[in-house]
Amino acid sequence: MATNWDTLVAIHGPAVWATCCRLLGNRKADAEECYQETWLAAWKAADGRAIVSWPSFLCRIATSRSIDRLRQRYRQQAAIGPPRSPQHEDLAGLASDGATPVELAVASELSERLRIALAELPERQAEVFSLHVLSDQSQPEIATLLDMTVNASAFPCTGPANGCGNCSAKRIEHTGQRDREERP
Image 1 (tube, rainbow, N blue to C red):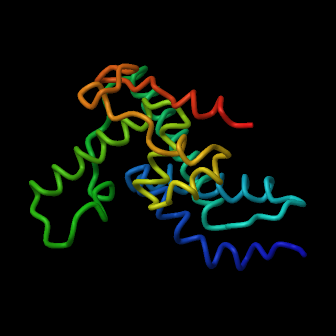
Image 2: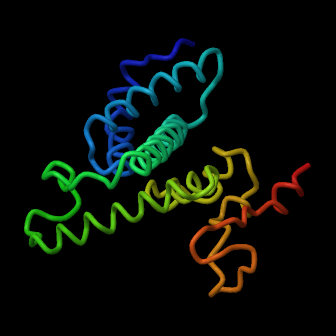
């Protein structure tokens, strides 16, 4: 059976767009590019293959492409200087319509810090975190999407304050390697 891409875009396009915007901070050009890259990657990956869950499949691709774009953005910023000041469009959707300017500024700063932290995480951890926290995927759904055990799909590190001796407070290095090695 052939895939009806027009129907898929109509049904799942808004969720893909929301994922890209949420991760990229509503920077329209970046979100548009990731949106297009997501659909192109889905088209290539689905060629002759049955996709069990289109929403999860598309969310994973959108998350991965958005995190790649974040990494690219922060590498460029490190090379050319500090980030530009946020424009009004970057703040759209971060807070309710009744938010004060201070609340908007705090929301913008926290969102930017989250994006920086995601860009610094190893790719697999950033995907697991984004799929679970930002896209509300369950651990079993993430495990299926990323081809890992359910235990490995848990965000693998809570930091040294909570007993993890495998990482520092600034950069998470613990990857749940033991869980992946136990797979048959």
